[in-house]
Length: 193
Image (cartoon, helix red, strand yellow):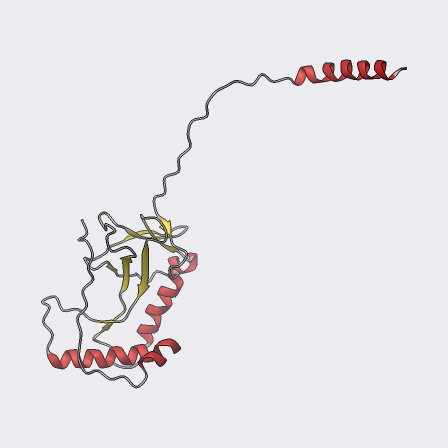
């Protein structure tokens, strides 16, 4: 057989094999795909287990602490960011909670063994990287906004004591410090709706 005959035979065989597998492509546009994110976990945030451990640590703290609280604060990185309809959630396999935020964007974190076991995540209904979230030390707030001076001094001393016993970072930062006054700090954020 010559080369041209072999090539012809190959083309005939190839076309007969290919014919049952020929598919007519239809020109149909695929519908656009969209993803709706109900909430976002920010990888830079603390885990629920760390928050839980902080709460456990404060409960076990043996020195006086009646004027101390560990609030968990959420605040926008951009101060012009609207906090309207902002929601903080705790989400796990079985855990699905919306954590109420006060006007200062503070949340009370519940101690839930199930959420701890699941290593539930804190999530907000905003894009990751737009909010900070951490626990801080603070004095217990009075509803009427009035604080006797002796209570403020005691609260300051208790808070310093708690912070010094927390982490090495705080031990170094607050070593040798003492309370000489109390400063009130109010965040400048747009009011929650």
